Amino acid sequence: MKTVYTCFSTDVIHEGHLNIINEAQKYGRVVVGCLSDKASIRYNRFPTIPENERIELYKTIEGVDSVILQNDMLYDDVIEYLHPDYVIHGDNWKVGAEAAIRSHVEKLVSIYGGEIIDVPYTYNDDVKKIDLQLKEKLSMPEYRRKRLRQLLQMTPIVKAMEAHSGLTGLIVEKTVIEGDNGKLDQFDAMWVSSLCDSTAKGKPDIELVDMTSRFRTIEDITEVTTKPIIFDGDTGGLTEHFVYTVRTLERLGVSAVIIEDKTGLKKNSLFGTEVSQTQDSIENFSAKISAGKKAQLTDDFMIIARIESLILEQGMDDALERAHAFVKAGADGIMIHSRKSDPAEILEFCDKFRADNKETPIVVVPSSFNTITEEELAEHGVNIVIYANQLTRSAFPAMQQTAMDILKYHRAKEVDDRLLPIKQIITLIDEI
Ligand code: SPV
Ligand code: MG
Image (cartoon, rainbow, N blue to C red; front, side):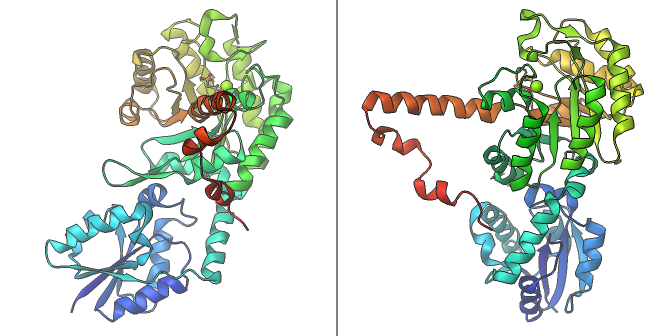
């Protein structure tokens, strides 16, 4: 008897999946693969139910002979083990980013005479509704909030990209590429940067944009996205205020706040010692962290302590002493920052911190030391990488050039080739 294989990553079985199983049965014994959680977060979206429960769900489908776990988005593991005569899939994988996976699978099965069967993709109102319900579930505060902790368990390094509006949130949410290894890739989380939130409002990054406005930015983003949020909380302000901020962020579904150990008028770290900035004492900042931890109501939320010792040239020992003290005070993670272009001091910190602490997540923001790759950072024990301002910095020169060119040519024709077509801009936002 021939073997027919199909891979599911869905959390809900609908008409489309049943149709695939029905078709598959015509060709032989049906084996369903459950795409692992780890692969799903790169390929599709975060699973609302974990892989072991999805396996059980797929087993209940009539006509399914057996269910196995598929770890590899590109099917290599399963095809090597199972040698299916047929791989069956909805024909939607013939286009877009998934087309690369289809052609990879086709190449693999053709080696031993296997074939691909494409069945017409089912996308009716019922299927559309289920899709929207899953998306809605992922965007709800109680699901979104815990996702950063879940991601930390699932992936060697969590990749966060800045977002400061609904539109930039959508870019982080929806950008999927086919990487050099043929696998799809996307960002895991969003960073609501104080620099970019302030810049978008034409204001300096000095805690001038107040928390009410910052929360409004978060809501603009949460309205149109599902990915978890790491909030740049600047210094956290007064401890008496910070405890309220923690509660609000939790309620909004934010996964983590990062606060930096500075006091007084905060200026952006990338100024370093060019401007006067005061580092908070270990005692004060530890008390702020502890108060925040005491105020939080869920186990999901994370308070991450950001250490400015390298930025303010206070030395490695000071940075390490603070890191251990802040963990002791209750910090759920440590962010270490540097404005040097050479990543050496960051890596030294990570290695030394990891020698004594194997567990606490380390966060880095490689804006200046941007030659280092995610893989290298992960090798030194980094768990979260934040691309803190690159969307803002890419949009600004493009907008400035367009403004200059329209002034120069007294019309917009000359700039039109580099603009998003009108049709695309009006269909960019999903309609309900
Ligand atoms: C931000 O993005 O606002 C940050 C990171 O705090 S940095 O600008 O590098 O200080
Ligand atoms: Mg900031």
